[in-house]
Image 1 (cartoon, rainbow, N blue to C red):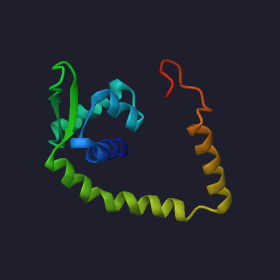
Image 2 (cartoon, rainbow, N blue to C red):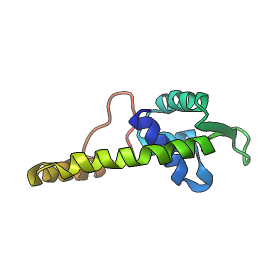
Image 3 (cartoon, helix red, strand yellow):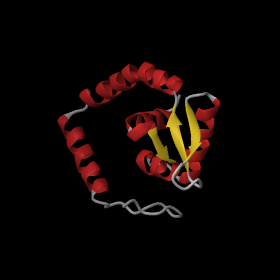
Length: 121
């Protein structure tokens, strides 16, 4: 499964009631709305996520992680963590400083949005 799929499963697992509206999910995992819709379609076919109507208004849709999705996330988490540790622990101090500066600039909104995408708040 892709890193984006892992991010979706992780975001849903950590969300209240293990569910998010599709627009919220897109914002959390930094995908376009159409991109997150396609990814949730794929995860739904695999039985890892399901869509449910929002009770409060009946119009919105939320993605909800399934028990199978939780199990897949638990199975993938050690590999994910080991990969992060391997790449970041092998970095030099200068590389980490460069990464920190880039992340701070991104967090401050210092990079313009690509054409056709809205800016992150």
